[in-house]
Length: 116
Image (tube, rainbow, N blue to C red; front, side, top):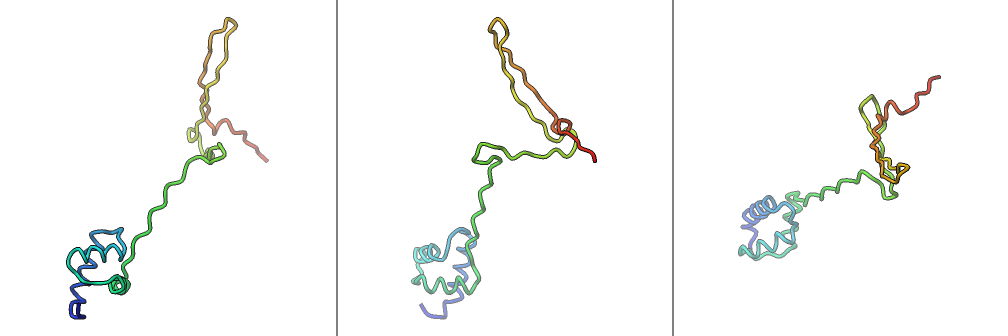
């Protein structure tokens, strides 16, 4: 390949980079070879850097709502009806039957308010 075809090669590299956004210059080189270009990866890398092409960073995975020690990240209530807690309480009656209750608490009203 001669330097005369540099513009056509650059156009093909940019087109492939746009089409395959997560591919780097090595994989683009393989695609160019499949398309009939006789290029080595050093030349493609040089053009890749000249054009300022980069593979975008992977997006970080979203963090968990809970921690690994079994605790939970708790919201601090800012106003009434903002944070609610619930829990089942179970007991048995005197004749052995199961008795369950669902307790629901508004955390804003459950927190003690200290005044100075």
